[in-house]
Image (tube, rainbow, N blue to C red; front, top):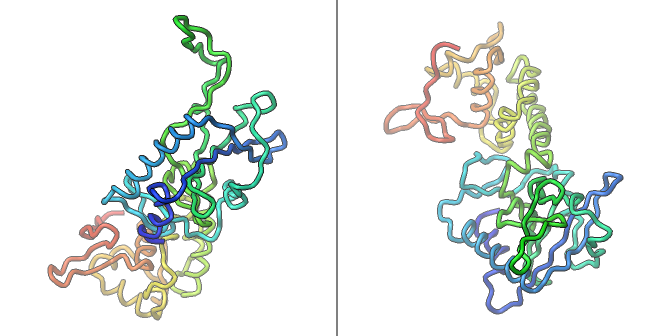
Length: 321
């Protein structure tokens, strides 16, 4: 997905010709660990306020932000001003509620007498109309709920402060995920990793990539790479390897000759006794081999300097491991 396609999905919030409604649903965790969807009855005043704050947030992040880095999550570098299209086949199981969610379906209504705010795990805010709409997903952290038994709240009633006598669910203008036209947009990758199992998905997908790498017959001890991706930092590097990269279709001898003739890579990559496979015997050799398969190493025709393509930083490997 390109940024213009995303903007087309979200631009309903700026329409002056179409009605823009809002529906709020709550994801409740049940006693048996299953989840239920409940619709929230919200006042007209709150509806208008929610529309205003999320319209401002979305415009600021996705329309007025010329420096936004928007890319596929499988190949992206994680930067501060970024959002990601979730392009991995393995969808987060803990977000299945989004795939099964129909905002126009009749759900039971949240009841303060029957439902506990502390059982709410997420808030779904849908903006638009039945023809065009998208859903904002907000994870509910423990601090999102102000518990009246954990703090002494002063509530103004007339000229008197009274005690807070019920829990409060706070909603700010942050966005964790957006779900639109069966596409997941990740705005908060930390939440995806911490609460929705993304780290394990990255490792699973990296292991599948390693099976693909094994078919190249390039690495003598492939099990070293499999163990390496138990660290999610390195699993993300493997995940970025593009199966359609020209490197992945080169003859093994071409890759070996490239490494052997490279003035710097050749000092960090070792080969087996037959000189026909790479031996991964250091962490540096593993990182470099992943980079080679991702076509990360470039040479400038102008300066004759070697570069790493991710940041186009001059390639500089220290002599000692």
